Length: 282
Image (tube, rainbow, N blue to C red; front, side, top):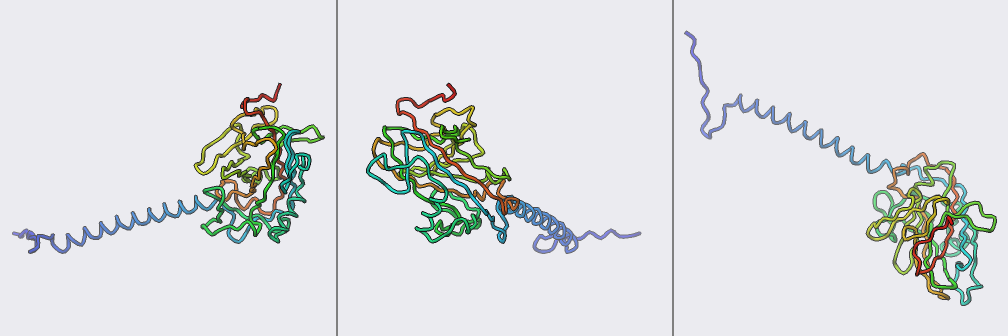
């Protein structure tokens, strides 16, 4: 008759060695599976966070750029402050802005490519891994416009074309539409910042440190708080910092944009404080 040998627990109450080994193997397999899943999830997270940026070695080469700024009749601006409204301008060309940036920083922005950057506060810009992006290097554009109005007004960004043979109002254009939609333009007056996102329509969002706005196409343009930038007092010179950049966290900001050209046109319109809603369609 065969005897059945029952294995007893050891002195510490632990299971016998072979039973313990099986449990350890099972636990190790479970740990390995968990580890692999965590690694895969981590890699997926890193991939999701970096696909919206250009490759580190392949910064964009924006070979040319056109920037025109136009304003309404009661609103003017210039690159310098003046005493008299008549000394301000209705139009500024990109060449004038390019020359001013070169005079102030020594950077030729036609030769220096824009690089993808981002910002949390609208003033301090960084590259993909958090390194500081210095505007004096030309990786993004920064310049100051001095505004003056003949009356108290609210200034809006508008898509409506002007009366001086202008074909369009505010526009960011490129042969690659993803480039235009990945760009941003911000306006800072007295520490208050508004960011224009060309992907948005008649919308405005509070992003904490700044507001983000869009503007509708010309046929739907309605002046309201959604496209309001800042206020002006009659006859008072008001400096506004303008920044133009490629938003690295935008899902469209990929290597497909490398070497593309773009055109930027900004057009402003003023409205009365008493009437915060203007239907421009008649």
